[in-house]
Image (tube, rainbow, N blue to C red; front, top):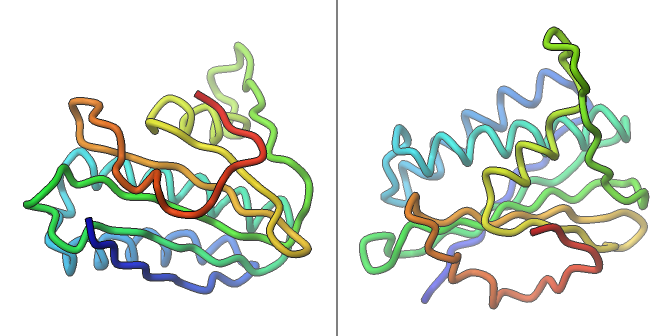
Length: 155
C-alpha cells in the first residue's frame, strides 16, 4: 500500500490545537476520506489529545505527522498519527479519577481506547508518540509496517 506522509509544525501555544484539528480534516478530505466519517472523527479527537499533550507538557513546538493511504478505497482507511516533541519524558497515562468535572488526565486513556495501537519512542533529543487508527470494524492498520519501532507501547 502506498502511503502519503504530511506534517504540520505546531507552535507552543494551546490555540494551535484547533488549527491542528482543522488541518487534519483538510488533509483527510484531500486524501479521499470523508472528514465526517467515524474514522475521521476519531482521528480529530486523537490528534487533539496528542497535540495538546505535546504543547502543554513541554512548552515547546511540536510536529504533527499523518500517514494516509494514497487510495483509501483500495483498503480500509487506516491512518497513523505521530506527534514529535522536545521532551524525552515518557508519556504516562493518568487516570482522572472519580471527579466527573475534571478536565485533565483523560487524553492518553482516550488514545488507548480509540486506537488499534499506540506507543512512543525516543526521537533525537525528544520523543515521538504514535497511534494507528483503522476502520470501524477493528481491521488492523496496514501502516504498522512503517519504520517506527516503539520503545514502549500500549495495547
